[in-house]
Structures are given as C-alpha cells and as structure tokens.
Length: 203
Image (cartoon, rainbow, N blue to C red; front, side, top):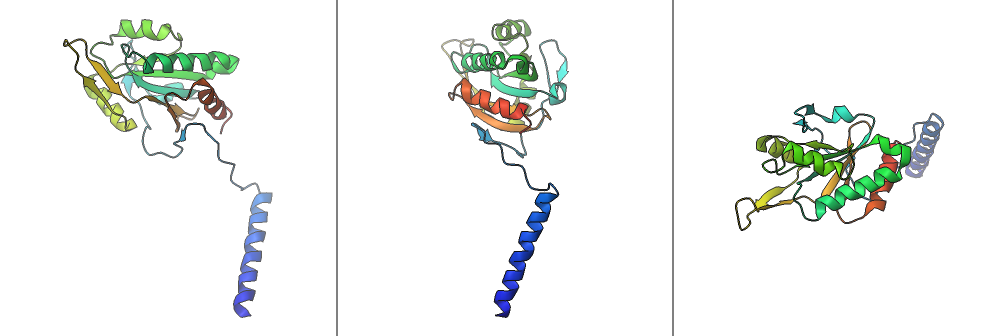
C-alpha cells in the first residue's frame, strides 16, 4: 500500500511538473523531419578554412545567415559532381527570393588540375553565386579529415587522365553555421529542397 501510494504521488508530481513546464514554454520543439541524414549535434564538419579562387581565406562565418550546401568534388567528374551542382542550382532557382539565402560551396579534391580559372567557369555554368574553394593538397586533406570524407586518385592511361574517387553527398549547414544534414547523392532535387526549406524556416 505504501509503495503504491508513493508511486502514485510520484506520477502525480511528474504530471504537474510537465504541465507547469508546458505553461512556461519549456516544452522541447518537435524534431525536424529531414529527408537526408540528420547530423544535428555532430562533432565533425564544424569548420572550413580554405582560400577561394581569388586567394581570399573563407570560413563558415562568411556565410552566416544562409543555408550552406558544401560539396566535395572536381571539375572533370563525369556524373556525380555536375548532377549535384545542377540539382542545387535548380533548387535555388525554385525557391525564388529565398534562394538568395542559399549558398553553394564547392571544395575541389583535385587542386592539381582545378585551377582558379577553370573552377570559375565551371561553377558559373551552374550558378554564378556558387563559391569554389581550392587549397593546397595538405589543406584539402585536413578539411576532408574534419568532414570525415574520403577521396583518392585512380590512375588513368596517362599521368593526367586520372579520376578521383570521392564522397557523393552534400553537407547542409543551417543559418547559424551548424552542420545539420547529410544529403545523399541520387535522392533528387525534391528532398534537397525540402531539407533546405526546413533549415530556412529555423528548424
């Protein structure tokens, strides 16, 4: 009898406490339902420190207030890279005025061949607002390590005809500069747009 009474009182107290918190506005907000993999709270992909094609150092702080979509790739990529960039450009355009709050960032994993002039022309073919980052091989390696991504050369028939295996996904950052979503390649533009809309809405 004593045990049951204690349990009842404890349950009643918990109910009152929860009700009180709700009235005070302390209830937790519903978790965003992303189409991609939710990375909220991840202890990696937190920083970027690479020069752009003009040699200007860039960090995530430069894009505060925008949803940032970071992609690792290279200009001679035959399929994954152009498809990803085209889908992001499509989403940005479809968002209308909100598209101005979306920033595409392309990090080359082939700085040897991806010279600044080539990167500029390549990204402008998708969207002039997209930013290309190109560091030294060591800088790229460190950035890839921070993002926990893999890339590596695959030899071709000649020294200059190699390809580069690399991660086929994008990282989405919210307007506060926090990594939030891992968008897999092949899902299409619609899921990407859905996740970007959630981040723009403050989810």
